[in-house]
Image 1 (cartoon, rainbow, N blue to C red):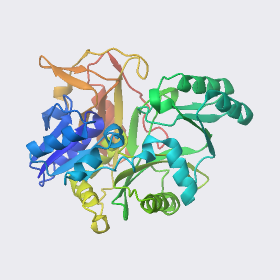
Image 2 (image 1 turned 135 degrees about the horizontal axis):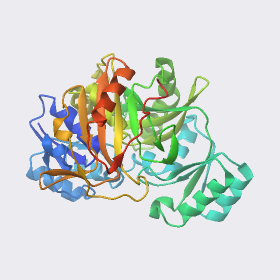
Image 3 (image 1 turned 120 degrees about the vertical axis):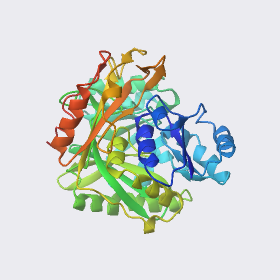
Image 4 (image 1 turned 90 degrees about the vertical axis):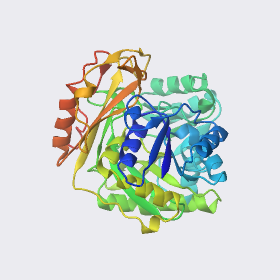
Amino acid sequence: MNILILGAGGREHSLAWAIKQNPKTDRLIVAPGNAGIAQLAECADLDILDGAAVVAFCEENAIDFVVIGPEAPLAAGVADATRAAGLLTFGPSAAAARLEASKAFTKDICDACGAPTAAWARFAQAAPARAYVTAKGAPIVVKADGLAAGKGVVVAMTLAEALAAIDDMFSGRFASAGAEVVIEEFMAGEEASFFILTDGTTCLPVGTAQDHKRAFDGDTGPNTGGMGAYSPAPVLTDALAEQAMARIIRPTVAEMARRGTPYQGVLYAGLMIENGTARLVEYNARFGDPECQVLMMRLGAQALDLLLACAEGRLSQARVSWAEDHALTVVLAAHGYPGAYGKGSQIRGLEELPEDSRHMVFHAGTAARDGQIIATGGRVLNVTARGATLAEARAEVYALVDRIDWPGGFCRRDIGWRAL
């Protein structure tokens, strides 16, 4: 079959890598792609936020299956456009993707279905929000309601930090995403990522992972889109996973269906775990980045079969086959990230690294120029490996990291520390 993946990051590179291994794949196109993706698939210059343009491209290229990677095209209704055109599509409708596109919407869903989550309040103006946090005190969590590329959340440990975050969000830094602010109770515990495929009825867990959001070692520095991840997440035991399915995931999916906006795609639940209980931190309507990289490294070719079963409404017949292994990925980011960073520096040494079922460097923000690989983003590479143990996977990854010649970049050296 001919498959189109929408996106340009490390998540999409790992999806393409796994899908390419499946014999069902004939032609694989990624739009717009990046320099790493171009080594295993065709890349296309396409506006992935324009549903009509995506549909026209699919018709011109006889596409059989569309896989939507990032959140922005989901929120823009691209899945609605492709489905309306009769194209088999993986990814929720715009109405269902509100589970990620609006923090307040998710909280309303949780309230309606009884899913455990942090106490919360929403505000459309700074003054009442400031009064609320002043009354509540710190630590407290301040979130831009809309999509802010993973940067619209401040875990404020002091009142001054919380007030500054409110002013920052209402100042227009996140444009319309910050038009409303959600303020939440601070939840203590250990956070883990739980990934579930759902066709609107059946819910199938497809893996756990743990992400490292802070920029620097020891979980210090500013929040980022993610500096590394590993799978599985030991904190998310089988018992806790079933608890989350029973109390959070299935009630959410049932409530979405009850409202006439059934959810089809991957549901990424960020969970806070404390004293044997899981509470929902937030939902994302797509695979996490960089969690997708470790999940795809472990799933391999079967990933396509699972995505197809989800899109075709036959998840009740699907099964996940897990190896008893571990995967870990480390993000190489441009100096200055998540703040201002330079672009255009050359990355050397990638061509000498192994690329196989146990070792991959997924590209997140790269381009090819005059035969050279250059950095074009904040998060640039995802160095990823599998091992029989997490310690083995981590050793493999950092051995690869040390062979990459890129003075313009940095990484955390402690990914996986919680589990190890």
